[in-house]
Length: 134
Image (cartoon, rainbow, N blue to C red; front, side):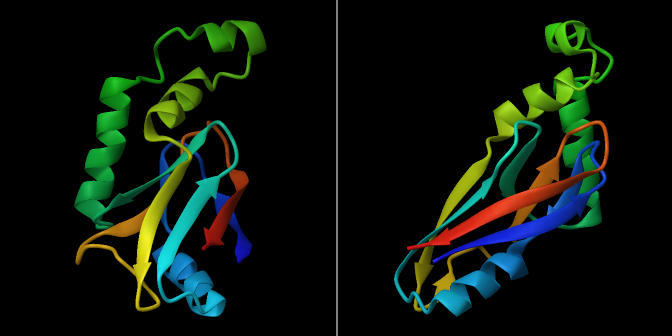
C-alpha cells in the first residue's frame, strides 16, 4: 500500500513530526510483518528520526547552521539565483528516505524516537511525503 501525505512547511529547517501519519498508513495497510518506506520527493528536504522535543529540535537546527551555514557562497546560488544552495546541501546529507521495520502491525521505533520531515528550503512549501508499506 502506498499513500501520499501533503504537508505545508515553513522552510528554514522546519521540523515536522509525521510519526502518527505514518502509523496511520500502516494500520490501514493491515500489514503485520514487513517494512515501511518514508520518502520525501524534492531536493531541499529530508527524512530522519529524532526525539521530537523542543531542546533537540533547537539543537538540530543549530547543528545544520554550524555545518552548512546559509551565509556561505554556494555555486548553486550563482547559477540559479534562488539563494537556496544551503538547502540542497543540507538535504543531501540528511537523505530523502527512511525504511523502518513493522512487527505485529506496529512500527518498530524506540521509546523516544519519532519520524520527522525537515524542510531546509528558503521559503514555505507544500511537501509530498510518500509512505509505502510492504
